[in-house]
Length: 117
Image (cartoon, rainbow, N blue to C red; front, side, top):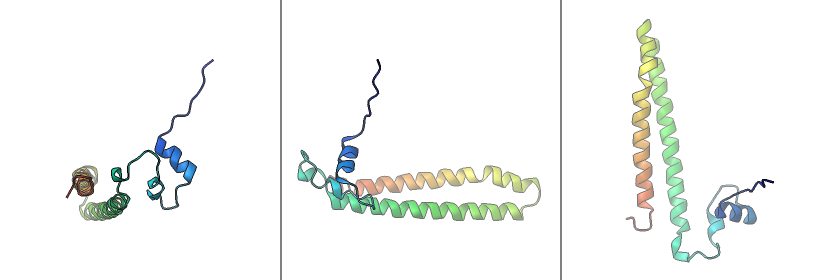
């Protein structure tokens, strides 16, 4: 007989046992057994999380503005050229926004790494 087993991360089990707060903060890891206090800096992790959230909001806003500009440009260009703008122009915009976002997110992680500046 095959038995199904549920596999979860130790952090997930710990969060379920202690009850994660509504904001999803990392505070429930403060008293985690078996982890040296120097291994995790909760304030740095919270700061990194806040900075990455702000970065995500700015990236989403930039995407919305860029797509609105492309739609306006497509409306102003007559005929099939407007459709070509809608078909081809979003991809370079998306690629550029994604590359910039990833580079900035990695910079945030590097700034808050244990050996970082």
